[in-house]
Image 1 (tube, rainbow, N blue to C red):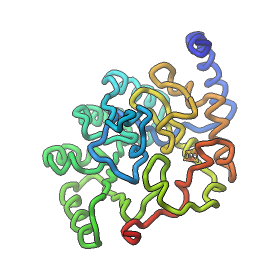
Image 2: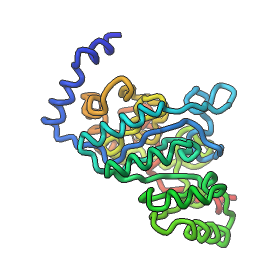
Image 3: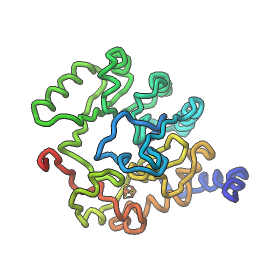
Length: 284
Ligand code: SF4
């Protein structure tokens, strides 16, 4: 209640203006807008897998399926553009953005604002839709395609060749969780692998680089914070500036930039995403 009054009075706006000028805390490098909540896959290495909080899945494990109202997506893009942001935008968080039929219209709008559209996909929608591949080729500057099903090198190379034949202008990169699996909270894999305690001593710069907006407007601190546990704010209720240049966000980000900073926060103190990746093909 008090927070809502302070927002209405413009207190956070004023704080953001002051902190932006006095702290030299830079604008984010990556903006992610989670245009819709769902994914057509259910991968063991993904933080969605064990979620029963109602963010990605309900108590019974059924998917939450919802999306950001269209006008809110445009407003967020406009705000970023007005702030002079020229970096990377993605239209997903822990979701498959190409399931959203509005993707092309948002992509074209981002391009019209001279922003850089990057994307990650599991590729399933594209495999069924050659016309969409053609439309997106060049519209997306950089596309990371997850190769999740291959069992050996030959199968992997066949998949890579397939995708290279579909995209000629977009830069392609392949994410390979069978061989290079990041340990992420919420994933089944998190509980199955050996953790390296030293990983908890490493600095983390994600909060300094990433502005991540979940489908309901809540802002995550980092890729590992889909639950928005740090309570940074809601981008439908506050401006991006107010949230990014808030005292709370800057303080957390600066703490985590230092070695050992992870120990200051419960979520970070169990975060092993910086340790060496797991080769699950060799384990099987
Ligand atoms: S250390 Fe904290 S801020 Fe960094 S990725 Fe892990 S949970 Fe996020």
